[in-house]
Length: 258
Image 1 (cartoon, rainbow, N blue to C red):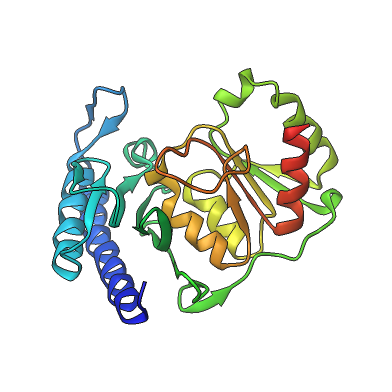
Image 2 (image 1 turned 90 degrees about the vertical axis):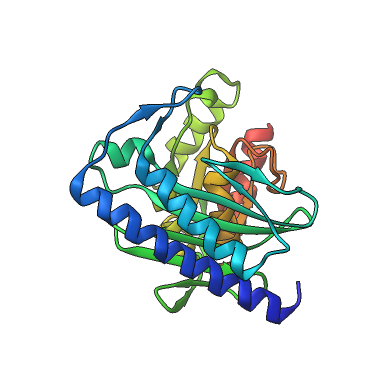
């Protein structure tokens, strides 16, 4: 992607995330009714209005790009420029008055993730990254930790329900025993912490690409490694995550494959 186009796209994504934050904070203060979608997950007016606000800004800034959103699906094709949008990732937390939810906006260019914005308005954090330009937290560039010794590693797990029935569940148990500590920050939070050098490994077995596309760019641009549990780079079909510092990710992948 040309630098000027990347700059335009990143500015639009940040503006769209800010617009979504206004919608989300409005409904956070007043409360919302909850509906259950066909996949048994909750949705609210905050989800829908936030995505509408995001779509308006992204479409105006980059009309040639398609948009794939959590609430309104795919508008356009998948092969060129493609926005990936989850307006309110963590709706279950939102409706239970827990501040661990966020807006996720990423851009794919011919199948490669090239920029991402992750905004958690109630939690008070925004991170962004674009290909080759590093990862940024509230205006300051961030890097993953240099942790290389697994005995010193801090591991965070998120959604691991599917992994409990997998042969690799035992490998995860061994990693937990051999690490320094285990946490379960979940959602956007542990990826932000990873990119800022506070956590060394994140493991999830039940995700959607819209949940983690922006976070993949942020972790990668912070110097980390972001793959699925099989070591494959992110695609639209991604369903699991193994993200970490280079050395800890490599050791975790070796253990999972074994």
